[in-house]
Amino acid sequence: MTTMTTTSLQTTAAPALRIGNIELDSPVVLAPMAGITNTAFRRLCREYGAGLYVTEMVTSRALVERSPKSMRIIHHEPYEVPRSVQLYGVDPVTIGQAVRMLVDEDRADHIDLNFGCPVPKVTRKGGGSALPWKLDLFTDIVTTAVREASRGDIPLTIKMRKGIDADHLTYLDAGRIAAEAGVAAMTLHGRTTADLYSGTADWEAIARLKDLIGDAVPVLGNGDIFAAEDAVDMMAQTGCDGVVIGRGCQGRPWLFGDLAAALNGSDERIRPNLGQVADVVYTHGVYLTEYYDDEFYGVRDLRKHIAWYFKGYPVGGQARRKLAMVSSLAELLGLLDELDRDAPYPGADAEGSRGRTTRPKRPHLPEGWLDSREMNPERSAELAEAELDVSGG
Image: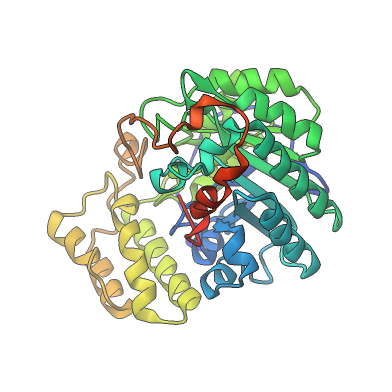
């Protein structure tokens, strides 16, 4: 890992986070992101700071069926401790089987259930952030998963959104049900399904959930944390017990160094110059090559990270285009060597929102989904279609 430039900012200390039997030195969690948080990226982030680093989301059906992609997603290297897996599912039986598999085969130290995915291909089948609207189904899934996880003393947590839209909020009901079911922690993204990734995250909703749950289990906040100061502010404003970082770390794995420092009372901040960023990009390419066991696939996967890494830095359009089409590590290194390594950290231009930004959209839901908060058993086949993919957003 490259040594990076740091600057000072006075902060106050924050306690570590305990999730079941897992004690974290820093109350920071990497959010699962499809196509992003594979072993290579988790490895890179982990080198900068302590925390919990979660796999990409994997569907319970694919895991039970042991699809090759799902088995790759849940794989952890020996240095990845604790091992954290996020499951997605719509059927209590299949979810239970998947959790049992992870426990019995010793494949995870922590399991998280995803009830926050707003992707239309998932919600139009009643999955993801649409599912907590059906209180009986949500209850059955969480209760079953907690029971199976407890067989191996594995803490089980949930991640959710505020609800479907402003008129159909679910997070307070879901939080109460989850706490009563025995989850070890819960995360709230302060947006609805309709919000997608638009606007500003509602931190007040996180505060309301924390007020409801109290100290029964930790409540973590998610949404619009793009700098260490954002995490400090969220915890101060909402009283939440920790933070979950998603888009804010795309192209900035060193953000976990900033977060670990700020939330543990240090005033150090990482401010890399262009040469230091280039070194991280190359390391990421090497890690991806090792992950895929194929150099071309590794650097091809790196392409989508290029714009995030060089956001705000003086990298010309032609260089960016070439980097976004790189096909080998040697080519990558040659292009990076052409950059002005001494170009300083660009400040605000390198910070702020990144990744997916969208406008609010009408949620895609099954016909008549909002008519009742109880699940119609006749719709089980339709609901199961939400699990057709191995991984979602």
